[in-house]
Image (cartoon, rainbow, N blue to C red; front, side, top):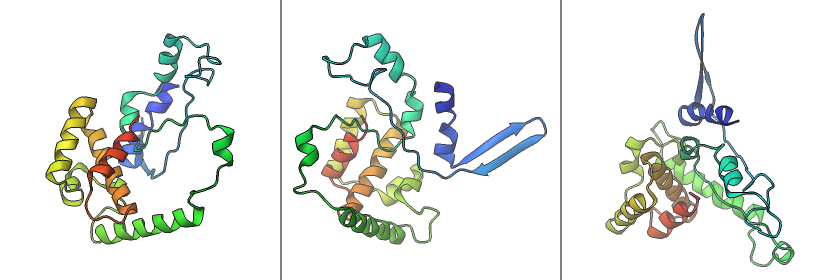
Length: 191
């Protein structure tokens, strides 16, 4: 239910859970990675009009179970389309798990160096006050972010999430500066 999902807001943001009872308050550490999935509609076939028979109201109600505030706290939100058989069997040009692992380890090493001596371990740990230090933008990049902030009606929290993801994408590319293409890719992950 929506209430249960929304109860994840504090642990996602603060990395701790506070339980208040009559006898007192207790705080537990809660650092975790949330990976979730939701169908596009109750039957799961939207937008395929040949299979999906859900009404627009039913779809809105179904998707409304995940609130805007919880989505604001999730770094990557992507829509995954059904894969056709030809694409599934196509192996040419794919990165192997070993190749991806190597890229990730390099990006983590970059972050280890970047955050040495700070409270952050990873880009996702950055607070709003860290953005100017660790995610400086050039004039063109600032202009892009101003445009998408206005056009997409972003919250400040979502704006910062895009910057963190763009910083990670730049790290994966081995780039020291966040570029327009990193910001564009990070923006795409905000479906």
